[in-house]
Length: 155
Image (cartoon, rainbow, N blue to C red; front, top):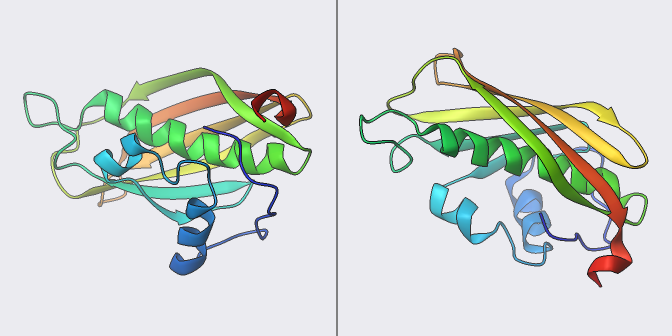
């Protein structure tokens, strides 16, 4: 995720217009990959980020949600939370580790990812991301750790 602006985000944003304004404030908006994958943010804060992604268009050759697509969603959500946390200290979040366990297949509809902060420190942030299908069944569990570095390195 790129450096965020100095504009402070409210504690929790759920209003679609405010989320769009937040995304527009990022140096490259939602990012081309997220646009291609259809990732949509539903809720954002430093503690919890929720987003959705369609299964259609993000499948592997057998018609199942591609594991890499789940990781894209997970990294997006965890990076946004890490970025919000980092910005409060004048820092930028950069991903250093991500992993994923794929539990079951999704073949249609939307998947929803919920990233919950596991650690919000001065030099790193870690999130657990649970991705579920429309029935509420867990599809993937992921964890991301971001290093929080001086924003001036990206100025």
